[in-house]
Image (cartoon, rainbow, N blue to C red; front, side, top):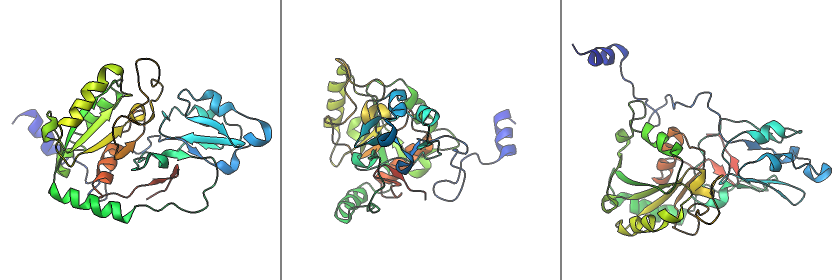
Amino acid sequence: MPVWTWLGWHKGRATTAWPQRPGDDGQDGVLGLPRLDAARCVASDSGCSDCAAACPASAITLRDGGVQLDYARCVGCQLCTEVCPEGAFSVSHDWAFAVRDKADLLNPGRVPAAPQPADNSADATALAAEIKAFGRSLHIRHVDAGSCNGCESELQALLNPFYNLHRLGIFFTPSPRFADLLLVTGPVTAAMREPLLRTYEAMPQPRWVMAAGTCATGGGTNGGGYACHQGLDGILPVDVWLPGCPPNPAALIEALLLLLRQRAQRVHGGVYEHA
């Protein structure tokens, strides 16, 4: 008996039952993006700007006597949680951060007046009709538009025995002509802008776009300058925004299921709502 066959028989099934059924999502103990408790911020009283000064991605800005946090640019370095004297920023395990509207990634630094609605019913009905046309499968064309390969490492993990993305009816394809979704990583360098646009134009209708990783959602630490854009904003119409540096495999799966209306959005107005 081959040793791999014996090991497989001995250890049993490696694939998690999550997300189809309760099971291990592989994220126990993994830090997510930091939380902002606006009520604890004293920037307006003391002039404190330690968090903004420490942020390497300019995700934190001083505004209206307080701070606001743009998760589209946050790289999850946790420096803000270390320097904030009042604990307004704290570490969390909030990793499922995909949103349909980029505005939902901005925490304005104040307590929201009321919870944001989860979905627009008209948009949901239209998208449900599009999804039905695909049957039970979704095919992804991935384009690396200048990333550091951190996001690519997490994308590769989707195909390992634990996550086994194919069981969800989701597949990667090398040709844009067979793709339903264009998944983009990287801040979009000048050299990759034209290949990216050509890939999008080669996809059949209906087609979707996902910005995966902080570089694609807001430029991260690499965006801007003469040779690099600030992510996908203004280049392609984006259907799902997923920050993270990099987003972990479970977050990528959540984002894909959010696109397919099989998962509820957890972030509204920059506030993470626990499932």
